[in-house]
Image (cartoon, rainbow, N blue to C red; front, side):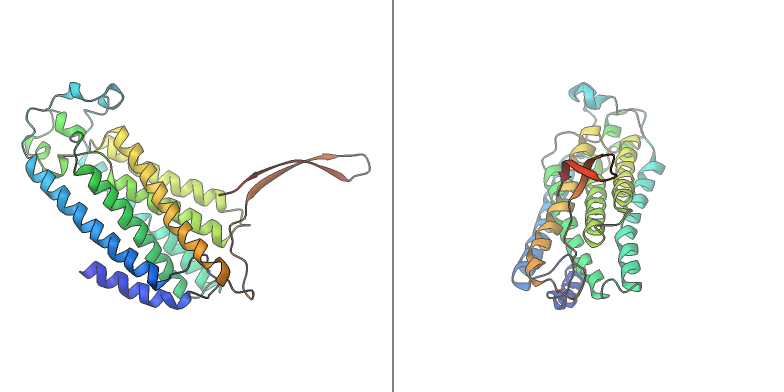
Amino acid sequence: MNRLASTLLVFSAGCSLLHAAQPYGLRPEIDLPAAAGLLAMQYHSGALLADTREDHMNRSTLDRNEIPAFDRWAIGFYSPRLSALSSVVAGAEFLVPAAVNLWDTYHGLQPWQGMLVDAVILQEALMLSSSLSSYSKSFPMHATPLSYDPKVPEGVRNEPQNASSFFSNHTTAAFTTAVFSAYTFQLRHPDSHLVPWVWSGSLALATGVGSMRVLAGKHFPSDVLAGAAAGALCGYLVPKLHSRRLRAARSPDLPDLKSKPLSWDVGVTVPEGTVAAGPSLRIHF
């Protein structure tokens, strides 16, 4: 209930920005039911996952040969330090959108309430991605890699959270935050030379989280790849839907924050010094 209260508080504060020139907008008649539905999904999926973990406490009969060859090589890794570090890095990713918002607010590029709107939309994306991961884990395909390793202490192998591994919630959350952060930065700063750096840096951090989950023995590569795909989808789709709602309400007095296509124009220089335009390659998302 604390999370619900904080989400609704942030939501109510952000609704006042519906007619402001922001890349995102909130509509109470849509977002309030959506937030309630996402919260219900999160608690329902969490309850199913808890039941699954309780029913699969004894994993002494696991056979590593049941794991496909493309995943089996990950059995044998075990590092509590990397496991803890992956959680730290995943949490640190939240600093990226926060830092960008603070910078824009400080320089007058957006009102301070824009941070609240972003926080609500990111929370919605994370609730969706977390629910998808929990639902998937509640129908266990396999245990975590360390559960198949006899060198890992038995008490660790039999911990409830190791009952199901597909797919990685850490990786899902990391890619949700990474794609949301980079996409939001691109919407607010379509002409900035930092756009590719923000994209590459955010995705590199998320990739690092997934890699550490494998090296810590917590997940197979397929768990990480599926988590990355689900997280990237949620991190793009949820803000994209909010972006479409606000286009008609964008103020003409503030900069246009629509996403501009990335484009490369090929030209040919002629002797007179003019440039004859050639084919134009445009990528838009």
